[in-house]
Image (cartoon, rainbow, N blue to C red; front, side, top):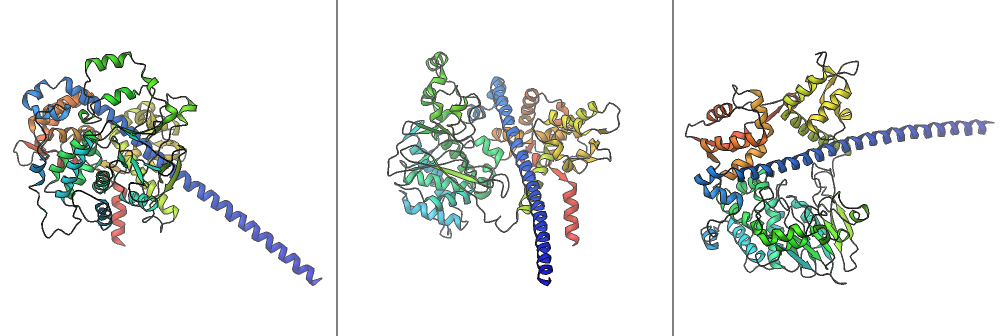
Length: 591
């Protein structure tokens, strides 16, 4: 009888333990699901804002077309500016020696020293030096750029590549200055060589902190193995994109004395990069995708070195080509099932065809630490792709998932609030149209409708609302709480808020435009240039800001009254203050 009691007690304990395990399991599954949902929402914010920025780039491109139509006065004053904008060459490029010979390498320099002609040893030397965070001297950077340009000029628009049963080819996508990703690819897949071919499909630079190092490794590898390492031009191999997304700033920071020279020759090197690569006459590797209107015959003929920027009006082709293009049914020249691209497949392609289009992106942790994996593709002669994924985990491996999600979510909400603030006037107007009783409150549905209708980001506003607004006990939203913990710092107190908001919203576009005007990279433009460009910008973007308001602000920003504006400092003055972050920092300082 005692044994029966003992057995019954054990059964009850086992049952309790099982129930407890199930409770813990269900709780953990719910917890993990909530973390994954938060992570997914954060990634959606990053992606939506990035896509919106791409649409903004189209608007900027249209502005430069508008400038082309209205540049008569500018042309009379500054033909060099027009040449830079629209690709008209006023004089031949400066001689290689004129750049390089005056840049001496001092004996005290302890970084990598390249030997021309370059060999595999130089590739290995660069990789190891960059792992030690050494900087390649400007003398060698210029030598590499000039030599790369010399070889690229001899190449066609599309590089033809052959595979064999004993020779695979590795295709890499965007790296965006993520040097650790390139190191990891080489660690897993080997350095470029005569038996280890690579295609790097554009967007080597911008966003990341080590774009110059990536560019130097790729260019040196290309010069050593020009038949085995292939480079395609992406939309970020573009001097105007570099102004917006950081590579120009990186160069000027790392090469304070000779950065301007590097930028000048790099701008030219970009234009000679091939458009794409064709593998075994079957697979097209090209940055940016294909569509039914893609005409490979036209792309084979186009003078690629005249394409200064993706944001600039394309250079006119001759009349014969133009006539031929109008007569050609362009979609027949690309077979989509043979296409491999770097971005998204065209929505115009039938389902059975776009399933054959592959996107490869090689920058892991692109938005934030832990946000995504990178990948590369290996192809052999049977044309069956093999996919390899990876993620640089040096900074994230010691952090649990909830910490990584918190960091990602905070960063996403921060940039979303800044986007909302840049449209504050429009949002308030939309809220007030919905608030017919003038109560200062909206239902969740009304608020979400106003947010999406104004910002057009296609985000789950209801799910994000706890991070963005406060609600009352009835679930109604105090819509002005959207802006309660954030504001734009005014560089001049007397400036009107609508003017500050407008300049903040378009600060990236304005920075590109002013940097283009500033062809000598001095960081200064005259008041006359500022006014002329603002009038064109104001007209094209349909901005309702009076010219005199901008004039007054510009005059106040001309601190030394010399008639010139340091526009980079001018635009940096428009920054967002996150009040809660300031409070958190203050609290942390007290601890």
